[in-house]
Length: 338
Image (cartoon, rainbow, N blue to C red; front, side):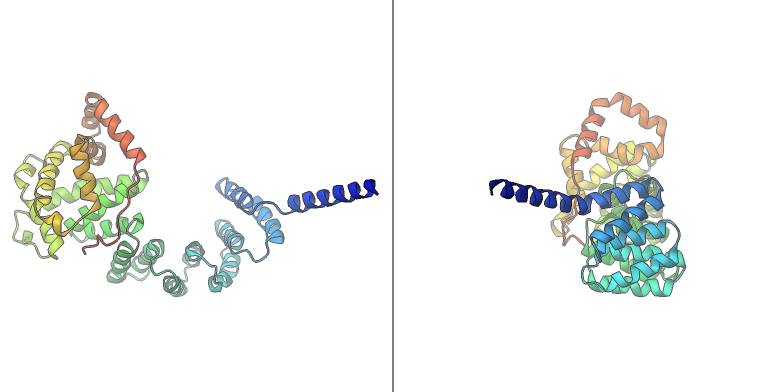
């Protein structure tokens, strides 16, 4: 009798082990798929996904991964057939709509893509990612500049720590010679996304926007015509024009921006609390503002001068780098002034 009970117990344990072995962990499966995707081995990614869907049928994450893999294979027709039913599922997330956006754009179906983004934003009205991508679509396929910047501004308002909308808005305002917003959004962006190819692009844009801003201070068009925040920013910056007469480079911008901060915190900061300026003021107090300005403007302006500065201020730059790598920059809600 005791032997029979032992055999039954062993059988149950073996069955449980078999079931666990046959039901691999979902997260591990998805990571395996992502590894194959990164390697460009889409056939193996599909093999894993097809097998995984047998264990987890109708799983939205796996079906989304399947559609994305088909998109990477450039099998857009099949990818579209896979993703479309997912958009109506209650557990479809923001990423599901992003994958659908990539597929629709690849097929060239801008009309359906617009409908899809509107549907996604009805479900996720505060998604910075969807606002950013919808704005891109409106600009590059519909040529609707006003609608595009409206999406990016809405993304900044509703999801203030998502970097993509600042990136697009900074480029938009720079192209439209709206220097204050190009500067403000551009520098916010590089603090949110500080290690990408887009970061280097926006650093160059910032240096150019400073030059253009001070050049325009000598023309009648320099009269402030924006809202109260823009006018306060433009006035505080224009008051440093004497320093700009020495040329715009990392060293002069450190002096210009130091005086700007002193003036800003003497008045406008009370009306317009802002995380970016608080960070700059903190760096100024800690003696790291010079190194921060070198990080922003040095390498993009004059790489030789930047390297010389780093070589002669090694400890300062090392301290800034340590600080920069260990901090997380977030923009609080409610600090929207456009």
